Amino acid sequence: MHLPLDMLDFVLAKKCQHQLSDVNYKNVPHNWTCLPDKISYVHAKNAYELQSDNIYKADLEWLRGIGWAPTGSLEMKNAQRASEILSEKKYRQHPSTLEYTSLLDDPFLLQAKINSHNLNNRLYREAWDSEKTQVHVMPDTPFLLQAKLNALNISDRMYRMEWAESRKHGHDIRPDAIPICAAKAVQTICSDYKYKEGYRKQIGHHIGSLTLEGDLKLANSMKVARIQSEREYKKVYEKYKTDMHLPLDMLDLVLAKKCQHQLSDVNYKNVPHDWTCLVDNISNIRARIAYELQSNNAYKADLEWLRGTGWVPTGSLDMQKAQRASEILSDKNYRQHPDTLKFTSIVDDPIFLQAKINSQNLNDVSVCLSIHSFFVFN
Image (cartoon, rainbow, N blue to C red; front, side):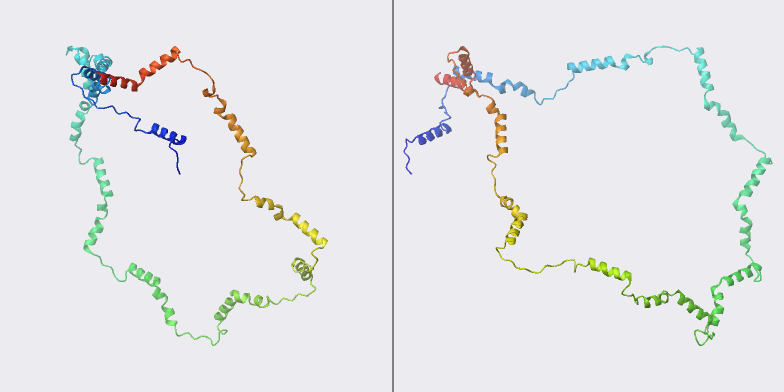
């Protein structure tokens, strides 16, 4: 591929690349040297110091981080003064600060002393506390004697004294004493060994009858067991329960056969015989047409064909409604852009000229260029 160097697209691409390139966007000024005592240099340094934000905020930066005690501040003084004014301690005078002397022979003071002496519980009970330990009761006082007798009667030690003394001397019981004989008799009566002694002696010495029927008790027991036996009770029933004879002309049997014949599926369905017809038979053709009309598959063939087919809503009713609604609600179509208005601004308008001057004054780039040019030419 050969492109001419003066091709329009090629030239425009070079121009765009030149505009977007950062190489020609920044113009680095040349290095220059000036003396430290030069007037322009000193003047520029003063101007930089005046415009420097760091020098302007140096005092504030110095104050940051320094601790500050509010002692002596206006708010502190106001708070102290308010606390002194609202202090209850300074507002009311304590009685201890008053200088006074009370008379010892004042009637009120003497009466108060007498009342305090009368109301003192310790002085009131002092005589009783000193006398209650010095009470003496005669030994033969009836109440004292009665209390001693009651103590002897209630005492458990006195109650068991004779029994304890008798245990020390031992005891002697005769073998023929009534309690001993009664205890032996009770032990014999309650003994299971004595109770079964006669039964053990008879074991092996009993001779019964030769047959089971000869013993009345055994025969009776067998009869009772036979009566209570469930197997013997149902023996006759189990023997004859399967032997049932019904006449063939019995009414219930005839009705059952008729019901079975009606409910049977054998005679309910009559399968027609196989028949053969020609392909061009009129009845066969009409039957096919009827089957096709009644066929659900043929009825839904179009629907089955449409299933899975892709559909684009472009041009549909809902799509047209949505587009029309978006055009009505569009803010871009509703409002007219100022670029569409045809107008001409006056170049020498005073307001326009003043705006240009203000823009140049506020432009940092123009200010820096003027200062730079000032330093360069000076």
